[in-house]
Image (cartoon, rainbow, N blue to C red; front, side, top):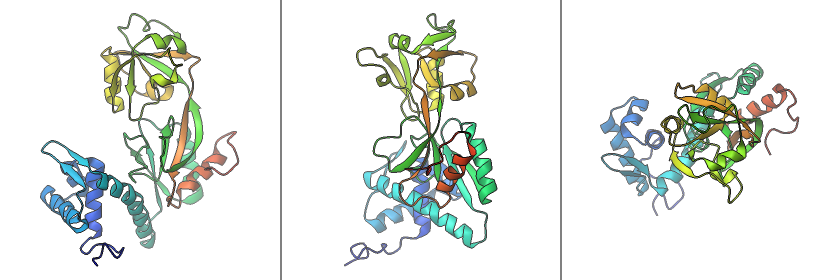
Length: 302
């Protein structure tokens, strides 16, 4: 029976192997991961290969142009991210370091988080590091953050617990050359069913299925990050819809923002991992519950 069969860690697997793999899994690039870890790319490649050999499993699909996770690699990354985060917090505490909570977000933090973070720091003495990730859960699933601000619906099946922090209104984002909407001050939500829609499929909050069946906008094109989405709207491929604070933060001379009437608001959630959360993650939300005017006084997470 080998080490894997007995349920113990395989011989030769060290913490440096795991950190190296997680860095590559997060960046999907050996070059970028090597820069993050401040080691040479050949050494990083050897370290990840050694981990694969020790586990007897291929974790990454590599080509000359791309790096992708295999199913085994994705499972390992999802398990390791939170574990390494907890380990770093534990080691830092043992060294007498100030506790650190990583707050994840996508395109923009709501203003309410400034108040929450101030209250949290005062109550705990901990530091807060902001982490931006263009991922559906803002880096929570990969372990890049400990608590995340998530706009829109929580992805089905996500292993997280969440509560609604606030709601944000939507606005239409249109190219200035658009003859139909660019000169309007207000547009009814139902009117958008007649125009092509540009959708951010990764962190966006608006998709055609928000409209009634049989009266939905045509999907003009998709983007997998906010910047691509914005440029597609500027280019006139279609109309975008975004939470008002997010849209107005990203001004562009080729765009106009048009108020929407009768549009469903966007729910903004605070989310933590469903298991083994950072010890301070729920404390952040708990402090926040008392800090926001009119906030519910119940336990912050169901």
